[in-house]
Length: 189
Image (cartoon, rainbow, N blue to C red; front, side, top):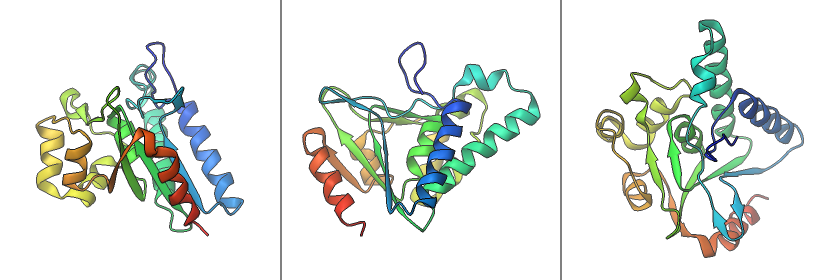
């Protein structure tokens, strides 16, 4: 999911891998799934900066429709009622990455002094509406006024703002991440 500049993006391969992995986990009876940016050496990194626009810009119309349908399949699986899903938002969460993150049944912001949360949906700036279901999901979570602010005004929301507006249900410190996620997982019986 990482590009040359080190920022994680949703390529077709990444979406196919997520789709396949979630299908296998559901088939095997998995009770829960945690989706996050990666951790390394006690640091958390960006959740996802969105779809790989270099890849998307080269798609023919029918292939673009297939790509969008794939993204929708992945995000819809996070809302499947047969399991619980938790998305951990950290660093940069933009565009298609925002769509993916907000489809978690539980959504938490990770607070870190070195990597504060920056959630934005800049697609409108480029005249785009992402195809992964994020515009509808955001509207479900925060209502029309806040949805317009995020899209039309191109606002950037940090962890406390996301919590206040209802996009995330909890803010956790990076140092408490392991124990807090462990407690969430222990409730999945």
